[in-house]
Image 1 (cartoon, rainbow, N blue to C red):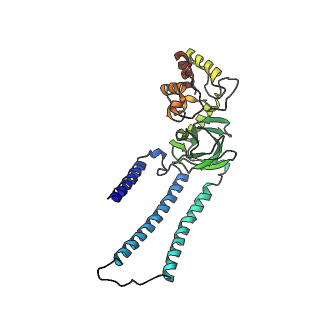
Image 2: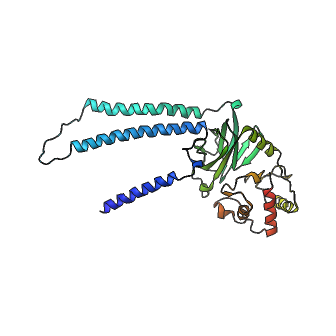
Length: 337
């Protein structure tokens, strides 16, 4: 009875985990591909699962047949025919797995190697990605711009990401667009993605990289080529000057407290910090710190106590600001375009 309860608990746990997995966000799932890279990987997964299901069914049928055919019967003391050393059986359970491995390995090798090839420059866009604890930095060498947290890409074009880490091992993963790639300190590693339709696709760090790992999120903003070009032009000519008295107070506070770590292009600041995320065009970001919706209330909470939103990050608390100063800093940041 105790054994039965144990197995019942295990079965319920398995079913619960399975149901929970099925309730995950579709915008963070390998089962909802938005480009050819992710589609090929999903097809490979389906092929693997199909082969495993066939093997499972065949083994199950043979198992049930043997259990029934050779079960113990009252009065039957005969010994079934022994098949030990049967050449036919030995060849059967050796050759069939080899055939299944060949069926799986040929497309697996083809897709794996084709997706690691660097696409021609005229057919792709190259973006350097740097992983930090706990945020992502993006450098567009051909466009001569830099951003952070949200990755903007044009649709219908291969995106050649060159990944490296500034501290520990991270892992870049946008499930709807492609596979996961480790991001290693001191080494550039490639990852090719492509989005065929505009949208916002979620991404996460797939490697345990510290206390804030679970909140090291990002967004991939896939835009039409025209929209992407417009975003690039906006980043090259940002609106970073204060346009009101309240924002002017925030700009002054930013120059006194923030620019040692953060950069804002077009603001006329004497230095551009590189320790924290580049805040140019901050008002267009989807999230604050990659965790909560980008609005004034959440930005205020972040400035007061960033550890309460994203534990382990290196942002100091600005609890010493008066209400007027905090509102001024929020006003300035929320007007960066």
